[in-house]
Structures are given as C-alpha cells and as structure tokens.
Length: 274
Image 1 (tube, rainbow, N blue to C red):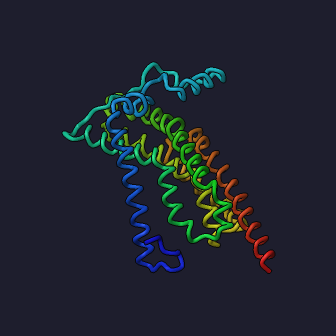
Image 2: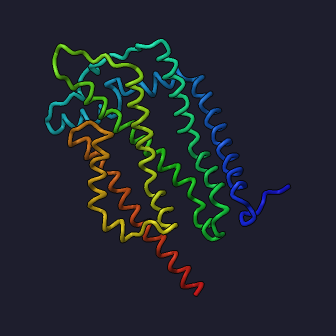
Image 3: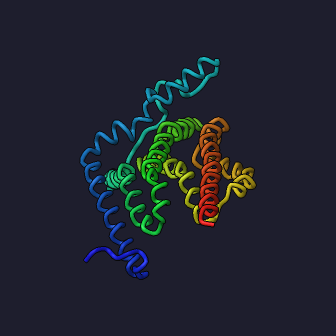
C-alpha cells in the first residue's frame, strides 16, 4: 500500500511517519559513529588533541599578529602548560564512544536535516517546497562552518586561556581527559548549532512568530544575549568574546534580511491570490 496523502493521515499516522524518520537518523549516526570508532586513534591524535600543540594554525596566526603589534602573548609559548590524564577505569573507553557518537552526528548532519525535511515538506505547498530546495545544502553549510569556527577559534582560545590561568605556582594543570574532550566537543557542537540561527529565523517567520520589525526592535536585547552567550562559550577576556560575538551578530543581521524576504514573498502571494 502506498504512502497516505498528508491530508488523510491521522495523528498516529504522523507519529508513525516521524518514528521511521528518527529510526533512519539513528541508523545513519550509528553507522558513521562505528566508522569513526574504528579510526578513533587518528581522530584523537590528529583532530581532538591537535589544539594541544602550539603548532596549531590558530596559535601561529595569533602569535604572528601579537608579534606584529609588539604584544607579549602565551600563544607564542613552546608548549601548552597542561597534562592530560585519565582517573577512571572506563574513562578512555567512554571518551572514545561519546566522541564517535558526536562525530557520527556531525558527519551525518546533512542526512539528519534531509530526514527532518522529508517529514516537514509534505505539509508545505508546492511553491513553498520549490523555494526551499536549497534548505538542506544551506543549513548543512552553516552547521559545518559553525563547527569549524568552534574548533579553530573557540576551542583554542578557551584552551589557551584556561591552561595558562593560575591561582598559584603550587597548582599544576593535570586535566582529566573527559574535561578536555568535553570542552572540544561542546565548543564545536554549540557553535555549529548557533550558526543555524538564519534557518531557525526563516521557519519562525514562516509560521508567523517572528517578523523583521520584532528582530529590529529587540536588536539591543539580542546584543546583550550574544555577549552573554559569548561569555559562556569562551574564556572571560574581552578579545575572545568579541571574536565570537562578531559572527553571531552578523548572523543576526542576516536573519533580519531573511525574515524580511519571507514576509515580502508572503505579501506578494497574498496580493496575487486576492
């Protein structure tokens, strides 16, 4: 029997449809996570632990910038003043499993979005589906840019600040592996999700919860929220917060433009139908 028409589906039919989409998402994440687990040694040595080396590209860039303006900085140090250690029996195994799962989700993100889109799209008009064909590509690109931003900007800034912060020479930074990996994972994933802001605003505008006027009206409040958010995901120094806040503010401005375009297209459609 073929798939029911969207107008003929009951609430339970919608739940069943959603269940199968979620099952496909989980299967995709598990398959990619399994592959990531197999290559975990490479992932940890070349990706996860790479920001511990002072040869990391971000440190080199910031060191050269500091030297150019004549400022002393810890970005030019020979090594990171911290030691990673494992304090629990299953610590390394747990870190391996959760990193593989997160890697599976990140790599599978375009497929995850595709499945969610397949669930939502039957409820849209044909013209709306036509104008939203680039949704999967755009949302995936924004997510991956956010992940890279979190990995190359947020992670090294946070790591360098926290590793060099000291309350006394009596205290050495012997960091548990779970704490370090949590910082890397949360920085990358949080940044990836934050960069989805234009997509979120697009759908909120489509359903009438957000308008360009509302976004402009609460722009100053959004600025405060962005600064608070930057303070949460970065070390508490002004330079790091500004570096993180700038792209978020740009995304907010882009979201205003997107909301404006959506409203304009909706008004044109209403006039055409009238």
